[in-house]
Length: 112
View (cartoon, rainbow, N blue to C red):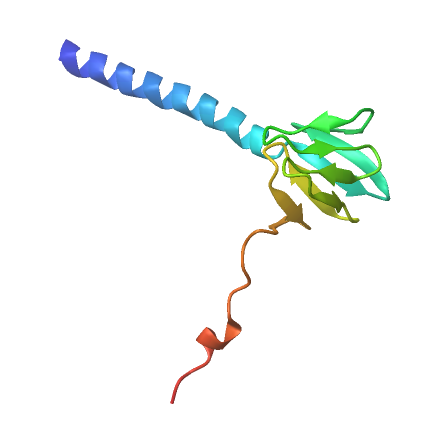
């Protein structure tokens, strides 16, 4: 009987520790820099503040205060209203991943 209780407590403890780790990972996924109202804003967890300095992302991309991005290979890009760059360098436009290819809508048509 004591053995089952120990196993149950261990499983519950493991579950709780994994859930705490997962919540911090989800919060980190939302961290990024966005162009909002023509101004560069930084989101860190739930807090959104005005960008006050040039920032280097984890992939080496530099984001300037005017919205200009300088990628590692030397490519430059200007952020537009509503775009967000995550801290890992992934670009989002209106909450959608810009790297995903648009699916062909014709696959939804019924074939006769």
